[in-house]
Image (cartoon, rainbow, N blue to C red; front, side, top):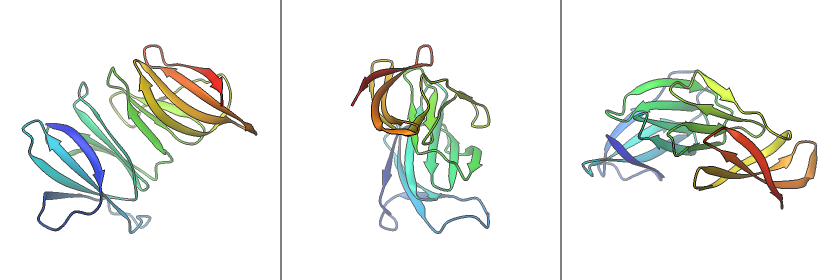
Length: 174
């Protein structure tokens, strides 16, 4: 079972057992992402994913791992590393997992929650239209992120998403 995941540079050949995750498409880039996985038994292996690196997150409660690259969003079974689902050409730039195990993803303008399938996402309502969303950190059950107000790029905001009720509010102006 995958317990840790870390984006790394291309490892030396033979350093890890490697597994290639690819999807045949004429739209594939020539870029690759390498992720070092550590299992509960402390064994390590490396996954090679199509696309430039963005983010990786593990949900112990869902027993899944989500890998985000420039080309694909991969949902893996954390028990064996097999692909459960794949989404091509994802627009997302941010990925995290909430304390209750839900995946939270964002493009530049919207935040969505994935619970058990990357095909079913719930877009969250926000107090303002946002631009340039960037996740920062967790404070207990609250995800802190920054953004600009859409069409008012001089207004930079610190926002918080309460994972217990999926509510987003403005914390303060920067």
